[in-house]
Image (cartoon, rainbow, N blue to C red; front, side, top):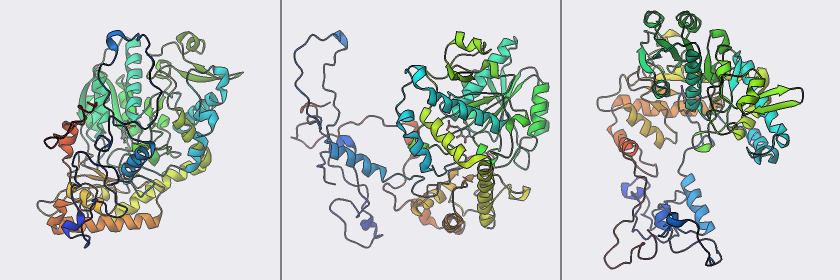
Length: 535
Ligand SMILES: *Cc1c(COP(=O)(O)O)cnc(C)c1O
């Protein structure tokens, strides 16, 4: 650390004290390129600033009682100090650009650099949502062309481009369903959700004021069709189904499920987060789906997680399309138009929009990236994406099933993710311990304890962008930690050993997050930050 450290902060652990690195302790707590970094409040000073501003001339403030009467208390750092702080922190993150990211259900695939190049073109990167339409015709063409591709790939009728993530898209789809039901004066109250559903599904239904009821899974990890049929009735507004499901399996009965739901007067919502496994192979429209969100940031490679915002367009059936939210785009004889107002939309027969999901059109930067991805792959390339994603997941499943419990491996190949359970782990060792040991091996852990239908679940999604060499390396690492868990290697309980921080209390962090920094009590006699002008 080169910044003075006013809080007396000390690195949590010096690895050499553990005897792991066989070297002397360092003064800084750094270990060569493994750099320790305090919080920005601990290195910055409220009384300094990185920029020179002219003195404020005495003027009449119009803020009245809103005027600030204390200092703002933000740490002042110079530009190089700021850049270094965030660069140092960024080096402690795992990223898809560093290695295989097996987080199941998240489709952490490589983000092709071509997409980035296209998204950075000034004509796309610099557009403003309030610019006159005549000056953004190219951007509107991009939105519309992407919309057309999504419709072609899904076999659906309409698409709402504006939702900004998968969960936001789910809400959009459920609100379309609610609007369609209300339009026919039908006050249904229940949304059915299978046991294996992603947590966002019941959350969305509850948020939209529906009562959520579970549908059990059958022996082989799929929706129990008979149980579903038995529950259908005049109070069921919709069924929300993920296909392929979160056990990594294709719902073979999807068409029969849709037919039964439609016959009972309900709608079918498909969670399309797993579209990567079937893109170019199966059209959800052919399976009777009424609404499905597509995570552009999963299937179509736009960055996500720490790397960028999501984008969750929702494709809609003919029955739901009239209720889709504003704004949307439409092709006219003079090019693509952006329809943001009710009266304009009505000219295009779109008279029943339920409202809007966002202020503007959605995530432009993700649209350009997704379209660039689609066009660079082409129809054949997209089909190969699905095939290779499924092949890679099956390679992982078959390479580990002799060691790890693979509850559905006997029912045939998986789709794009391989699911394992903790059966056979030595007493006292858990999936969490295995995941922490995997961090020491240099991998982000897989999705854990989800889906809930498998004890100690580990959901591994390699995606198609990993080479065989990269898969083999990951498999070797996973086999290594699995063997330790089976053999009862107690040292795993203390893992990770080599991460910048050791085992954290994640429950505490999630339930009681500490979101504000408070200056620690200074040693007696030192002026406090607030006495120096900070707060
Ligand atoms: C990722 C995911 C979602 C939610 O999408 P976000 O973009 O994270 O809001 C919903 N369902 C499934 C199955 C997912 O994997």
